[in-house]
Image (tube, rainbow, N blue to C red; front, side, top):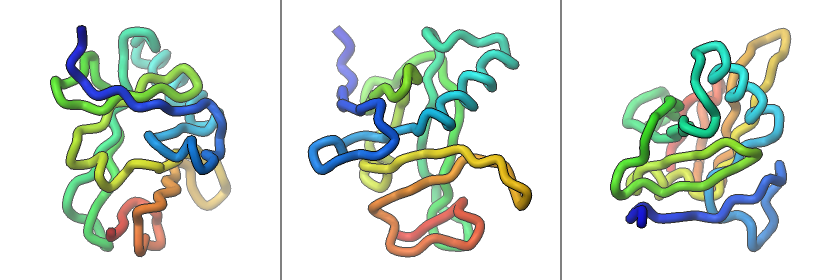
Length: 130
């Protein structure tokens, strides 16, 4: 059996009080991840979306999105709208309860993070402080 920690994520775009555990994607974000996987000839069944944070950015931490073929032994795992999500334990401390959306607007196109753990975010939305 996989020794990774399982988290429960719902497929709803908004998380309620009992559903806030985990990392969630909106349907729009999940569609964009599927599109990226298709363009890279990767299967949604065998590929994970890795969500993490790293030190840096104008507010202290930067968000990181990547694709992974397998989970690490200590990764937290969840699923949202059919997309399997991985997050390392240290990043998970800062990302638990986060919802990731995708916006395609005149002023920019990209993933947008709604992080309840962020005390301050930069104007571009790519970094935060906790």
